[in-house]
Length: 222
Image (cartoon, rainbow, N blue to C red; front, side, top):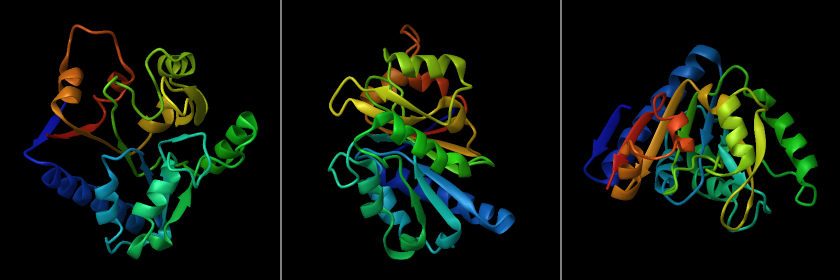
């Protein structure tokens, strides 16, 4: 694991912002388009707001989710809602945002529709920004969840899978391990001593995050 330590969150966010902008700009110039996969939660909100001001060719950039809660896209728990409000503004208002919730009444049908929407991510996504929970979960791949564990062990499943979180709202949708690891640039953004200590522990069971740290650029701040 290569760990990049920063003295404060602003310093970390500025470095991540620089990396994301450079990667997206290069990809559009070389390929004509780019794809940015983003995580939910409160940690990256300010980063997304700053990214919305970047002078990038946003009309050639697709933004999509790393994971989602199976709730309405107008629900306060919705990752799509957060990203839409934090990122898809200012210069980034022309970016195409692909969500994961299409049918709130039928989980299996919704998953089918979401998988079709995500078929566009071939070739691989340009940048994938990950976060980490204090229990070692990443995206919506949770320790102790059968669907999560099956995907992490096989690594060759569908693009998206349905999982169960230990907290409300329990129904989740997540990119698979294979899809996440296909990103050209994998970035892990974490804050706080608790998460760092968990990440560095040797004498513990394998956690979902362990399947990704060797491939990711890990950025940490207090």
